[in-house]
Image (cartoon, rainbow, N blue to C red; front, top):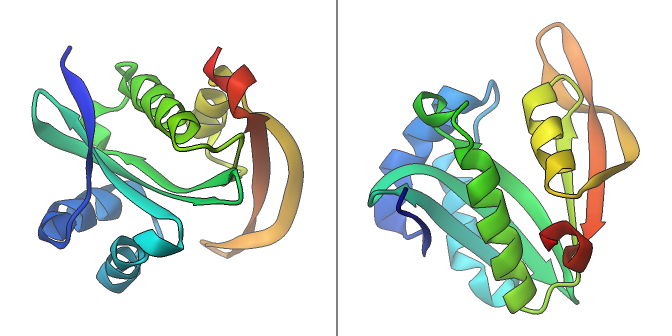
Amino acid sequence: MNTRLKPMTAADLPTVLATEAACYPEPWSQRIFQDCIEARSKGYRCHMLLLEEVVVGHAVLTIIAGEAELLNFCLHPSHQGFGLAGVYLAALIADLGEQGAAKIFLEVRRSNTPARRLYVAAGLQEIGVRKNYYPAEGGREDAVLMGADLISAAS
C-alpha cells in the first residue's frame, strides 16, 4: 500500500470540501480551509492524505510552542474501515515530531466512537470534556479532549 502526505494547496479545495461534506454533519467551509492554508507562518499545517497518489483524505493541524493540535482529520467514507486512518495518523504524528512538537491534543465528538478508538490506539488518552461544544441534531454534543506526549504516541 503506497501512502503519503502532501501539503494542501488552494487547488485541492474542491476535493477537500467534497470529502469534508461526506464525513461531517457540520463541515468546514472553503474560507476556513483557505485561511488555514494561508496561516502556515502562524503554525498551521494542512495535509492531503494520498493512497496510490489518489487523495483520500485531509488533515489540518497547528504547531505552536512545541504543542500540536489536530483540528481536522478526515478520511473519505469509501476508504474507512481498512486501517488507513491509523496509517495516516501515525504519519502525521511522526511528521509532527520531526517538526519539533512534543505533545498533541485534539477534540472529538463524544458520539464518534470509531475516531476515539483510533486516537486511543495511537496512544492518546482522554484528558477532559468540553460540555455542549459541538452543534448536533436536536441540541449540542460534548467534545472529548484527548492528548499525548508524541514520544509515547509514536512508540
